[in-house]
Length: 332
Ligand SMILES: [Zn+2]
Ligand SMILES: [Zn+2]
Image (tube, rainbow, N blue to C red; front, side, top):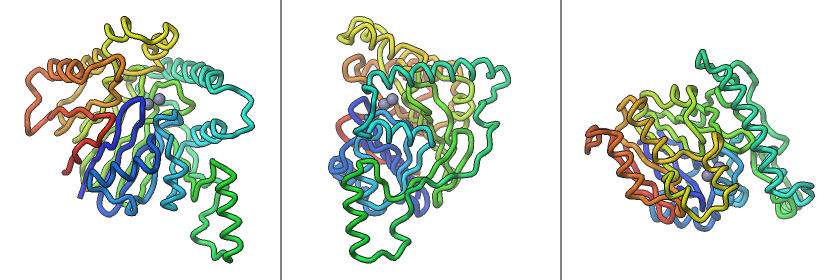
């Protein structure tokens, strides 16, 4: 059984359940735990059967319900190490910076990193693929595997209550280095976005490949390489350029969204679908649509035109991932 259920997509929260074989992974937890569980039930997904949570990046629309959900289910969370650190720093009450200052710092770091990646992209090489590092386990130990006395358990519980960043287990992964979670193979890849170490994923189970790429300013060569030969493509179609330019956002925010580390426009999504996409997917899901600077119909028409008659019930079937309700599960 391979299944892909988008619970929410957009700047008010992102979360998707990927099922392969006997394994279920929650990709991002950008809604409250209560709302995530409510939507899972609506979509016929049982929260109690989740095996792990994996995180794309530390922006609040991807992690708002992360700690509570992981603690409630007692399941491990997979991060890149920089993303975990950034998330901890963001939740830490002792933080010295405002979130806006910290975001600006991340934006600058990401821009510098992508400039380096661009310089190295002549041979389509992701610089992070060169590095090798064994999977690391964070200092939090799996409390379920140690036999604690009731008093110790109580102490652990109160520690979790005091520390909003406490998680049952943390596993680290690296962009460019595939990992296995139960029956699902996961290939994380770097995306250009103003977070500390943002990634997209290709999930593979039972021969089915599903790609998830939202929150990216443009589609660099390493991402194009990952999006080849997928059966399902969840791609960002964030804003209509004209609506964003004429819309309500302050100039600085418009610049951020439009930047190389911002979000993918309908136009950029369409350019990719028309010129580069290999036409192999059964499903194309447009995601992370802006509620202020886009309309579902604009995103759909733009992508339909780009697919130029290739969209049908059998191939390149076009779906839109909503913000406020789950998208009907996609089964293979
Ligand atoms: Zn986002
Ligand atoms: Zn983001």
